[in-house]
Image 1: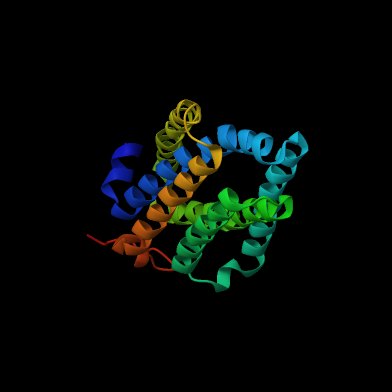
Image 2: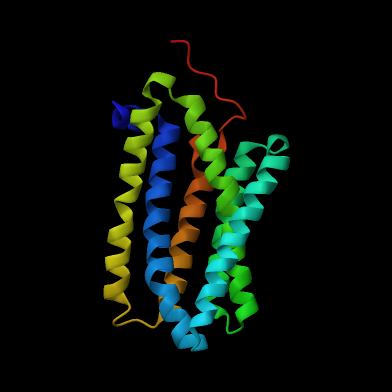
Length: 200
């Protein structure tokens, strides 16, 4: 029932497609590429901790900012702005040879991640009947999480033959296409600030 409802709602289906691709790419980035990047570019394992901390700090700041200011910002702007900010942060990493710049890149990704996830959860709760919310949420997480191990395995295989900075540029390019597809998707662009169910 949960999966049928998700696939039957064009907006939720679009969000699921976006989330699956994003989870695939970010699993490859954080679990595989960033440790190699910290070793090959900076040759210092402490840099990996700083880069991951940048993401965590950005997520915390973004979530707090969403709690304080989110009600006054349209959901379309939050969704699309967050996606494009993530893409910008991803593009910083492959070209950076400075720790501070790399940390800023992951901080930008985290800053977008907090409000983006919160907005999607709010929309999910509004669009799904309360009696089905548990099943829908479980189905949604199952569909999205499938992408994680696939992304990790694919990254491990590709990094055997591709430079890590080139691989990370590929992730940035792929996510930029995700951002563009979200911007062009009428279901996402027409998302209202409050969902009103079809009375039919």
